[in-house]
Image 1: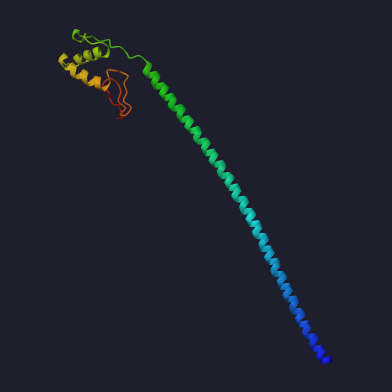
Image 2: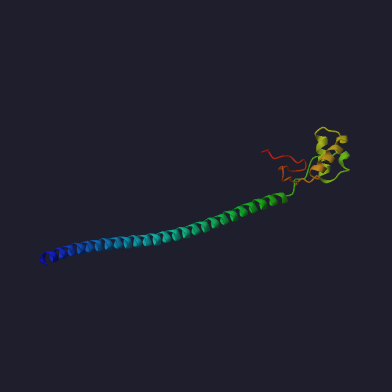
Amino acid sequence: MGVTGGAYLGQDRKIQQQGVSAQLALDADQEELQYLKDRHREFMADSAQQREAERIAAEKAAAAAKAEAERARKAQEAASRKKREAAEAKDDTPAKPYTGPIPASCNEFSGNRKTGCALMIAAGFKIDQFPCLDKLWTKESGWNHKARNSSSGAYGIAQALPRAR
């Protein structure tokens, strides 16, 4: 009984040691798993905070860009309005009246037509050419010295193009 009992006790001790080793390994695995879960949770929380911060920064940048675009639009409108008002003020200045001699053959006309007739004769053309000029300039500008053609930039009675064109 002694030898047999001793062998049995020795076997039990090996099993107990294996059980303790297995338990320690299991505990280590569980601690490692818990550590990984905690790190993952921290990472996810940090990522969520970073995404929220990026979203807020993007919203602020978009709002700033929108405000800047609005300021630029208002500045452009103000500049355009000033330019338009300056052009209107310039258009309101009366044209210098023609002070040159007006031939008797041009007395049947008045206003800009009378001046146009006088200038045509002064340029060396005969009065019989005036109906052609009258028809052309009536169509072009209606003899309005302030006429403007916005599509071509032409202006005046003869609808002359600006020097840049």
